[in-house]
Image (cartoon, rainbow, N blue to C red; front, side):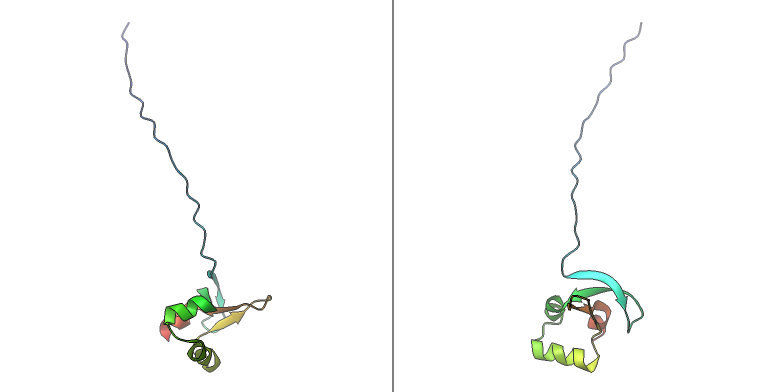
Length: 84
């Protein structure tokens, strides 16, 4: 009778849960008419590196698109930020 030996290599797998950042999500921008990443107002100001007055001016002039949720939160279209 022939005996055979085998080697067994055991490795471990670690699972990591990756969660979306709390300051962005995807939604339909009514102006762009497509699904885009929406950023919180604070994150949008960080991206543009401007103060509150200048940012509010961009919103008022319609340069930066935004949506308002049912809860009253304001979310900014990332595509319009890049374009501005």
